[in-house]
Image (cartoon, rainbow, N blue to C red; front, top):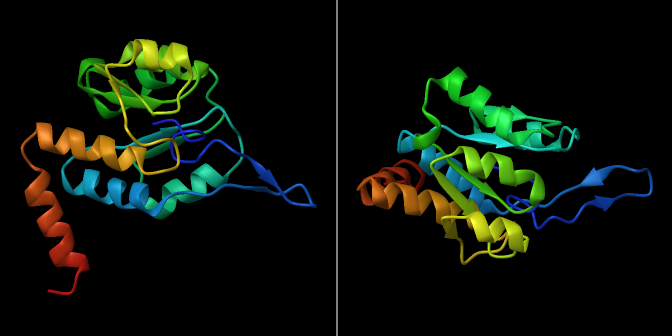
Length: 164
């Protein structure tokens, strides 16, 4: 998945000291946990070099976080080789022009609702949710439902984290 514009709303907030701040939606954090429980591997691929994505990815247990990825199609190919997964078995969610090569590489290209027009044009699926508003959660649910494991995964997650 892309980060800015997918896991965030795409805004970059700067403090007086020049620190960059980003807001992430908790539903997308739970989505990573559900994906892992459902046997899906996850990766965050961003053109930015700011370590915020690395920190968020580590907190969520994302399998790989790639910073400074300007050639995202090549990054996806390298991740496929690293995880021994064919590109056809990969879904990628993006929102802007640098995501197009990655989306053209994978088997399921997903655009967030507020993605750029050319990104939506090549997507197999466009989410109802905007970037930073639970779009990843929507994607994980789509994938797990397609695999027939959504109810089982959610049930196990709720049992583990819900106290019963």
